[in-house]
Length: 323
Image (cartoon, rainbow, N blue to C red; front, side, top):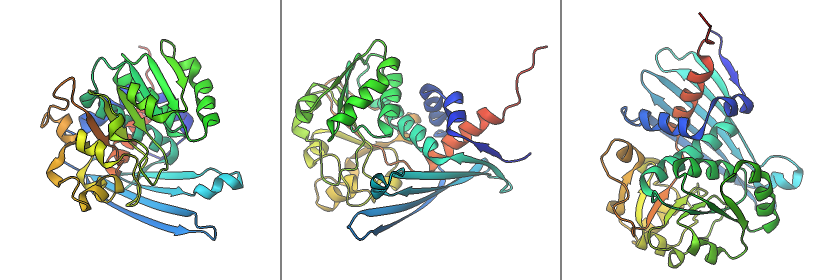
């Protein structure tokens, strides 16, 4: 069988947030994948740092895969995309190339499903207001995933450093958010205090979200930070909230976890559970209505692989024929 070339359009046609969350939850019940990753960074003449991220994972005997992601913030002024990625999926039994997958689309779907699956266990079932902090490429995917995980959401607040980007996102998403009101906010503190679910996906290096803003029962989903020096939440968020991660291994070197650990703000035991524990019933997740929960979405090659496996399974299945 020839290897597939899978486009963003094909992924969008084949997947739904709920389907992908269900598939990832099921795959988390299998033994942990073998993981490795490498992050390289270099600054240009203006001091803007770009990154190459190589993530690999292997779930014997099913599949193995590698993602090559490039993050070049300076591309915005060149009229080029800031993020590019490619994914290669191989057979875990014999190493054959199964598919080449649009890595940006795969990453967006994977990241959103990761956060949405975390919210299934950690956000209150009756949450009604969501704040999306950040209006980049990930934002619409995160809104869709969280609404799929918590259909009770009836109001979506949007905040971005550049308000015009938030307004543009609101206009883009208006047609698909029937039944939910969208509001653009310029006061992040006020919006965070109103929200029962906060998803933060920015390129911030210093914390944006303050623990003092979080209402009792809130769930904070942290997506953006991916280097040892990046954070989106301050120390008080981690002191007030019950901390969960998608993977202890892949979040250990991310500033959101690494910096407060090094400073003694939190201890390794303060990480209550990782996503596999939640999916396997090793931890119940949210314990009370008033508990504040914090989830660090670090991505990880195992989640890329689970997503690629799901996509490949859907798109390589033989077409149904009527009898």
